[in-house]
Amino acid sequence: MAHFERKAIFLVDLDLSLLNVAMAVAQDQSDLVEAWISTQKLTRPTEEQLASFRLSPELPFVSVIVQPFVLVQRVENSQ
Image (cartoon, rainbow, N blue to C red; front, side, top):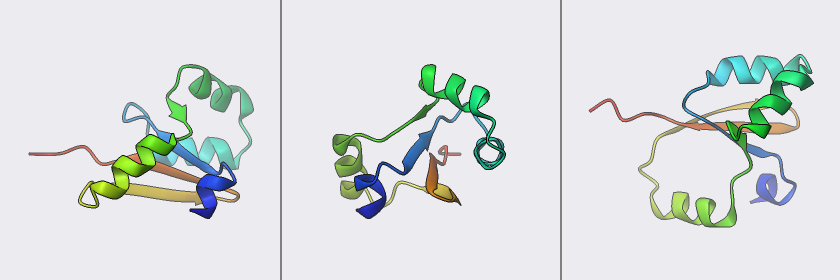
């Protein structure tokens, strides 16, 4: 996956609003983004995580592209 190879994918923790994270990245709010990274609320996926996601294509995700990044968040199971 090209986005993974260029380290452009970030996983957004369920505690955060994907749209708020996207806005912070787009507006270059580096202090806020760095805080999320330091608390592991915003992480790069590992190869193992990506392999796990590929093995479970039924897992629901939503994503937002904020050039050059792809922000991805799992959708909570509402059942």
